[in-house]
Image (cartoon, rainbow, N blue to C red; front, side, top):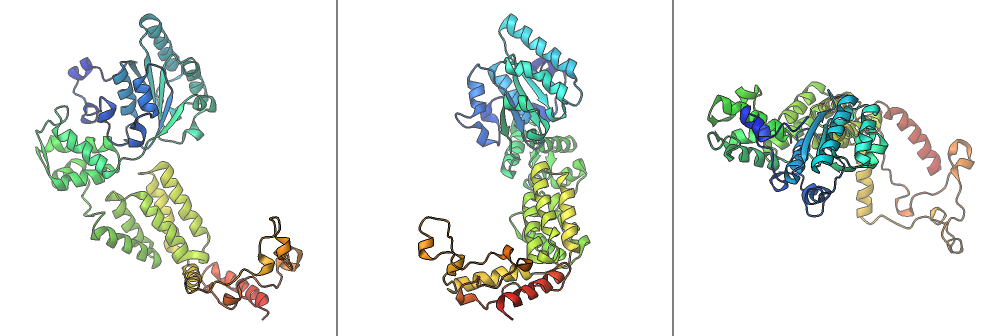
Length: 433
């Protein structure tokens, strides 16, 4: 099917604000600066007539469809959009056949844009290969999922992969301000209070399309758009939360202390407040990862695994689905037995090093692999623990200055209790007690 964005269609049917405000040139695109500079693949595609195949990978609302449309618009190429949700092999082949016919008859190239390309099965992706390989079309595939897992290798290897990033708050704010004043948008017919603008930015969560959808809904209710108007239009109360002010620090502090106090309900409440206020989920995930070692540690070693997995999941899928992963980690951290022995251990060790308690590495522990090390006596007398019962052998490991220092003092909480017993026996054996 041909482009949905031709002028006649726009005049016949009022388009949503998000569609009307789509940039027409690369210079109008807000965000994605790493993809739009001089000499980047997108610039080369726009500035040359040679077809090119691209995959645009990024969260929703970051401009994947917009960039495809801009490429088509600027280069005067015919724009054909296929949704992987509803199209089949027959639709793909028909679009390619039409593109070849257009190229042969008029010389006009076609941008074949496939939205949510990760939903195509292998047969559907195979149908794209001839067009990509023979450059019958400029293929652009958009996906929110990792294409290395969802796209066949032959198609991916013949295309450039460009990664889009979530828009920053300043980017979304610029999108909204332009929409209020631009004749294609509200054309100055409505005013947007600063607090309402901040609320829309928080609600958007880095998604430009969502921010414009919410703005349009608010503008239908009133010309003077306040926080109350936005709340009514979106049916979402404003969370009073300033990411640069006291609320940010107060809420994250309460969040950490609630997990430390083992109150999962309170911790989930503060997690919800941060998510609804538009806090960066990666920031939340980082705090959970830190907590897993700082406040749980060896009392439940699996807690760190859960926290790291949640952080990776958030990075991979983003919000809103990522909130489930964060909640999973929060509940695990809150209900886990607690121990701060790990953070105390490294703190004590660093403290001694800073005091100058360093000393020489014992001769038998020094590296003996490089040429000449043996002549220096490096490694002489080293006892290989695997050659002894239980994998243990008594020898000096620490420098003399800290030989009797005790850093790791495990608690008797949770899984750290058996660790404490084992460490006590090992320490006594190594120290000769």
